[in-house]
Image (cartoon, rainbow, N blue to C red; front, side):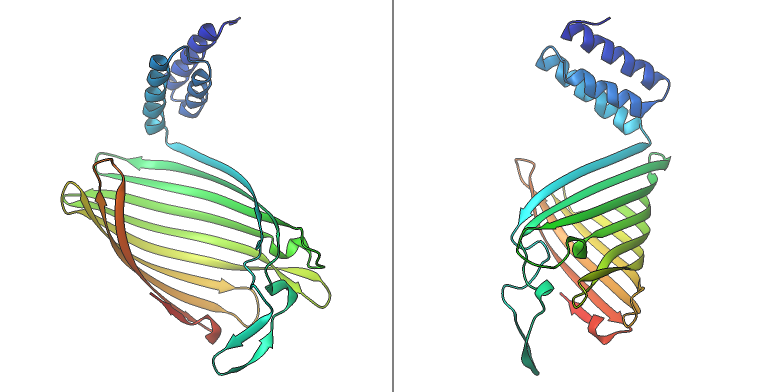
Length: 272
C-alpha cells in the first residue's frame, strides 16, 4: 500500500498509464489529476500536466461542471424605482416584482460533449448541457423565491473544418428554457417555457500572423408556450477582428446586427 507522497505519485501515474493504454481516457485524466496533488517537485508536476493535455486531446469525451453562489442587490434585473415612462404613454407605476430585489443567486451548470469524428482537416462533436438557477430574496417582500427559478436544456451539433485560409464552423442546436410566471395578486407562480432551434455558420480568416478576421451568421426560432407571445424569428449577423499582442493577449472589436420578428409586436426589435 502506498504511504509516502512519492509512492502515491508513482502509483497514480502508473494507473493513469494503464487506463490510457486501454483507451479509458476519462479515468486516465482522473488519475493524472490525482498525481498532481502529490507531485514531488515542479519538474514532475510539469511533466504530469503535459501528459494530461495529451490524454485530453485523445479523449473523445469532455465534461464541464460549475457552481456559483453570488450576492446581489438586484437578483431579478429590476428597476431602481417604481416610475414607468415610455414615449407616447402616460407615466405609470411598476409592480413590486419589477423593482430591484436584493438576495443570493445560485447557479449550477453541467455539460458533456462527445467527438464522434476527427481527422487532420475536420472534427464533429455532439453536446448536451443543462443550467439551473435559484434565487433567495433577502429583502422584506412577499414575492416568492421561485418566481426567478430557471432551467435551460440544450442539445447541440457542431462541425469544424480547416480550409486553405482559416476555418469554417457549422452549428445547430435544439433547446428549451423554463421559467416561472408570477401571479402578483395571488403570489403564486406557474411554469412557462419556450423552445429554440438555432442554425449558424462561422468563418475565421487569418490576415497575417497576428490579425484574425471573423464572420458569423445565424438564425433562431423561438416558440413560446405562453399565450399571446407565439413565435419569434431572429437573424444574427456579426463580424470582428482581433490582433495578437507580444504578450500573447488579444485585443479586438466587433459589430453585431440582430433582427427580431415575432407574432406579438412587442417582440419585434432591431439591435446594433
